Image 1 (tube, one colour):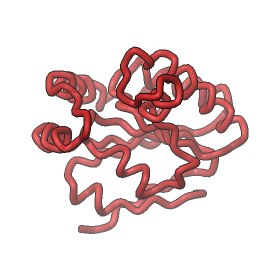
Image 2: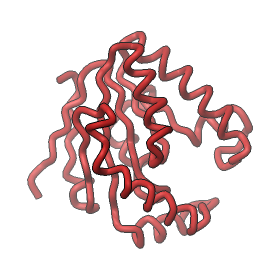
Image 3: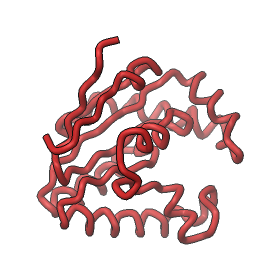
Image 4: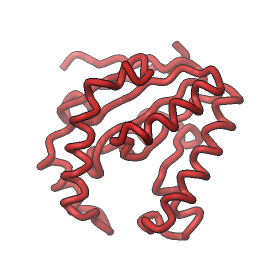
Length: 172
């Protein structure tokens, strides 16, 4: 497969979008330094000592948004590793990027639902399958509006081969 080159401007917001099990965390780990990645699971672990404690989600995102604002104000490239399948959630991230006058791009891991569900079963604490199906539906509804929302550009990766073919280039 031909390499897919994604150029990330210095100090940009990179929003990973995809249901649980789509490979967002693996993608982030493969392509970005650890210090660039703000993970909703890691934020839950910080505030509740448990990355799967959904009761800590509000506090976790408050922490994530604060860290995002500080990093973007300092012109640090920042990757948000969360499902980001709902428009309102992406809107909050875009508002932070706009306040810092930073570009924002989206990388959508639109892999087959069956693959996401299968990967989910391998997690130590799997997410409920109905939640993943719902995330997939919400994501599909959002795909047409990403550039209208303010992501320039938005990249769609639909197969594991496409995900494997990505080359992220920093500082473009």
